[in-house]
Length: 241
Image (cartoon, rainbow, N blue to C red; front, side):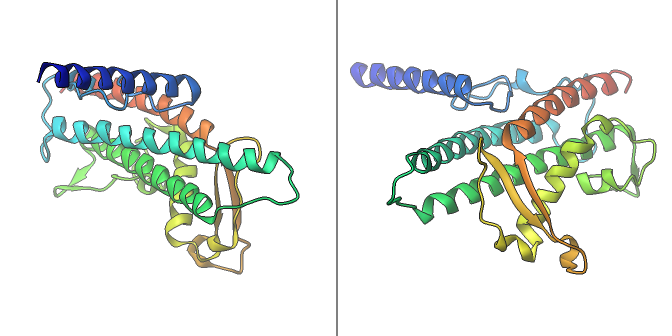
């Protein structure tokens, strides 16, 4: 039994070292923990005794933060697959073997990453909206990127420095979910791993579908800034509650 426990501990340390190496190699979401590390309540933003009237905010943020561990796994896998594909392309062989599964897996990973990042942002927007009192008859009417971008509450300007990130996540998400034209675009980033989509807004073909090729590193870097800012904002706003 002792040897088994020692081996488990050794394996854990080896896997933790791998996580740290991936963080050096790729730009990942910074939640304050590595992927396989256990959750710690200290990672939750400081609510200063404030209690959300609708949910247990500790459980919510535990879920949100640990969900990002899976996002980081997907980011790593995406970069790894992109690197494999580019390695084959760069060999410039007369005969190249293209694996359709790898392309499909890469595309699906991009969809998963965008969905989870957007979901996290939506939840933060809803949280700040509730703290600020933007609630009517127990309905949180600014609880998503789309609602924030539409400026349904003109004095809700806390995240205006992140409008580019919001628009990118909203457009990419809508492209992956609703854009009929998106199936016509089968590309990957040339120089780096990128989110790629063809967005036909409202599937209106009187206007040309808009192609998107967005650096994943740019999106993750902006998301990390948003993450840090939003936690500081929660601390600031709840001090006076």
